[in-house]
Length: 289
Image (cartoon, rainbow, N blue to C red; front, side, top):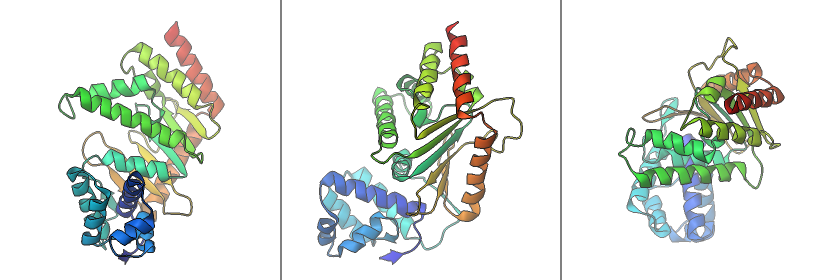
């Protein structure tokens, strides 16, 4: 096993292996015996501080009994995790990359969300999420009712994983005012989304702030990012979403420090939480009038 810093690729693979093992209902000792190794080898792999040899990973995946598609993805991710050197960023080109982002979110202690013109996925109401996914259907993938329902179910389950975590996470949403004015799926859907945001803001571990369109000097204007802080267990990560194609992860301090600083800056220039609630209520009243 090669040891090193817990890169994004190693963290993704480790979280995937942990989830597969738990779904199988076996212990780390059971998994280690299957590949003829000690428990610490499995532990380090799941924690993202070590990578398994290809043969070990293949045997472990066979033991877990996953599909061929999942197996191919895990082996490809294993190849990435074993690389000793790469550039400063990591682009996840493998299938169903949103699942690996979801695992990182579920593992983080604190998460920050900033997007322009749309409500972040973890803050979307069911109707809003369905409308967003329906708008993508037939454009970014072939028209498929099954795909729409699968993606919606995944998004709702991800909200439960993060928002209802046994140990509450510190979550900060910074919403641009344009996102609150953009009609998605109809006026009734937008109304429901505003109500949903008000309900989210009542949670003690969730901050909802609005960045008015009139505020100048936004360092993230036109962009978006998700900050992931794992406390002392792993280095911080920043995820930069794109509309289409592979999104980019940053896990080196030369990048994450200014990116976290940029997120903190938009938090500071946004309305305070109570003022943001007032704005949400005002917009809700105007929609209802």
